[in-house]
Length: 329
Image (cartoon, rainbow, N blue to C red; front, top):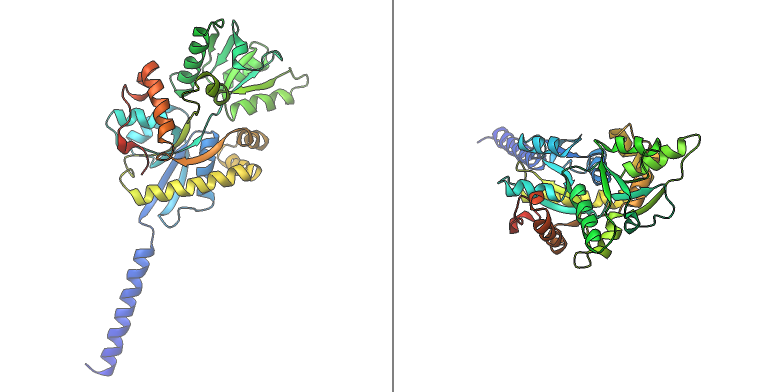
């Protein structure tokens, strides 16, 4: 081989090595789709998209808002979502139906608040004999509120009449028009009610009473924690442990940032939820316990909740407890 040929060979080899290196460094996925409701549990995912936190793993990362649990279930079945914020019961329910889903982390430990017009109502226990507006139907919020009110009635407290509304907006309208005195709402809807009430010329007295998490520890001391929502992996990525671990860690970092920078996080969330004022989103972050922990680390708390639901509302988790492989990547 002459000098030119040797040099050419070296150049070709170096070029091939460089291309191989670039190929190894390139993201393995084309598009990664994240999803979630318009609640605090989703804001870290929005931050991840805005900061390109997963750029090493996918060429394009997008966030999709879903409006209902039925819509989420359909998106998961159709494999249009890879990772999603969700109530902790939903991945358990899907897993019981044979779908390959996993719960990666729990980040929201109570997002439901009681708001009242009555200053004498200082806790859920003060609602005995009253009517309570609730937009929750056939979901975790509905199950938890029913479980709490049933337990309080068994303790001898007067029963609470639950009046279900079609949506949270309907419940807010009833409260603002004086047709309701007490309501349970998930954030950011509770903050929206309080904000809209203040915007009225003659605002009615309204106050944030107690979180569902706050009363839960008192009513159920054996299951004091309320791991209500977190991050799940769909069948499209559930077996990709490295990716799931990277997403879980990025989500935890974004959750810490959102909690520490509530205003900036609210501004990001407003881009995806333009109908929600920034002050409402900010307050929702500030009053929510946003603390992301791996599902494997809080497995005991999850199992305590699932065991309680299995005894009282087994359909919420598909009539059986999740298998060992359900928790974490």
